[in-house]
Length: 210
Ligand code: MN3
Image 1 (cartoon, rainbow, N blue to C red):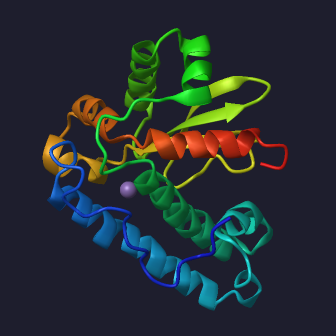
Image 2: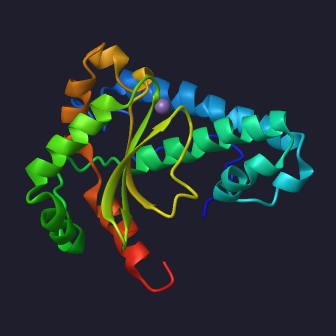
Image 3: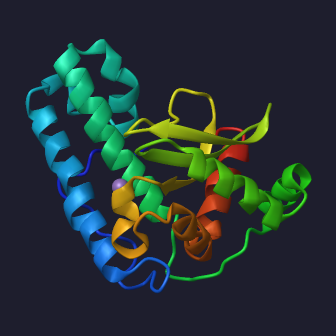
């Protein structure tokens, strides 16, 4: 559970750490302008909502519909924007070309046959997210892995699925470097996925209290 950050949290790597797959300019703008705007707008929304201040990001998103409409919209967009960007930036690593391993690899191969086949499905689904949104690799004990698209700053919270990885497919995540070629960005993204973090999320979920 994460508390709303009072200021823009730093990235877990330097701005050029994902080059050549995601260039410095794209990452700088994405973090310092796009994510920063969600952090600032969330802080503004919380000023007008004393009851919100002791909530985590996840609680703000889940409880948003209980608030008056303007506050609810501000929370869904901005708590969602902060949560999604934190999740996305933590889904990537300065250690390139990691491969899934351990129990996560076993489970992926059981469901998709091979990592290459998983990526083929992932790319197809990420290309199919219409407009601005996200693609999530999620897991549930009942259904196994599911690839779930969300629009705008909606999350997978409240679905019963546990998110493992997410890719931002808003155009601002790739347009400077890849223009309209979302498929090339998805291919490049594969090189910077943080499978260590993905395994931690997956194993956290598999503990009795996870
Ligand atoms: Mn973004």
